Amino acid sequence: MKLFFDARWTRTDYHDGISRYTSGLLEGFSQSNLPVTAIICDKKQLKLLPAGIEYILVNHPVSIKEPFIAKKLNKLGADVVFSPLQVMGFWGRRYKLILTLQDVIYYRHPKPPTNLPWYVRTVWRLFHMAHWPQRLLLNRADYVTTVSKTSKKYIEAMHLTDREIGVIYNATSMAIKGESQVSPGQNTKNILYMGSFMPYKNAETLIKAMEFLPDEFTLQLLSRISPQRKAELETLIPTGKRVVFRNGTSEEEYASLLATAHCLATASKEEGFGLPITEAQTYQTAVVCSDMDIFHEVAGNGALFCDPDNPKAFADAITSLTDPAVRTDLIAKGVAHTAQFTWANSAKEIWKLAEAIR
Image 1 (tube, rainbow, N blue to C red):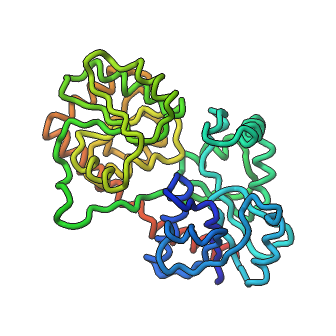
Image 2 (image 1 turned 60 degrees about the horizontal axis):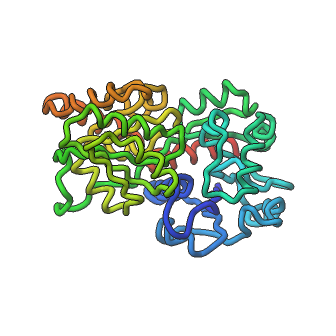
């Protein structure tokens, strides 16, 4: 079987969510010795993809040539093409096509990412004002996938496709390497937040929770943030409490912070998966998160769950982790649960699906 993987959304500088998902799945194919050909549009993308991967070079996915990409893939003998998004040219295709809808967040929160050009933000908002445009995209495929059972449930409830939906889980490429790595589980009293600062991510609750925590705790906000959003959140910091805006961290810094953190916390109100939870559990770090379906699926019984609108509940959960017995038990459950989420497992699921529909 000739399986092609659309990797043209891979970045050339540093990973974002879809870029990391692409790279991780292709890493899983390499680990599993499953043959796959990556479709790229810039050779610079190769530096963020697994070394030695087979690839073809084609047009950019938003090029005027995109509607006709199937002609080239037909000539190359593609049996199945997998895309980590729901947008890909398809006219004249003779192969099976698998498209992915990562989540339905932007139907509930239609405000687009602020880093996009104004005209893209306009189209984005208009697209998510109705369900039929998404149906048109997804129904072009032979099969649709998403990243969690929870997302699948929401997609089905919104009737966004008539196609069968499968789950290809997200995972983490992070792993504790070498004896020089800081021992996991050391407690620095750092509370880590990794994620964007979109309103639905609800970083506000974590900042407000600091009012109810001892002064020894520090909230570390790890992701990049705009000056305007930072100024908004700074007004919420309780007097005398430590909240650090790191404005981005390297993977090495992130790993070190996870390995020594008191916990990772998120009060997000919407997620398609929640990768930072898996990353934390991989690093034997305790997790405190919102009480919602997706986090129960991703964290299992290896997290403490709180009302995302209740800062005091988050503070109480974080404080409870100062009890060594509570902390040790939670970490052990998290490590056991997160073991199922691997790129190799997800790559094998794609391969099985491709064989079934080819």
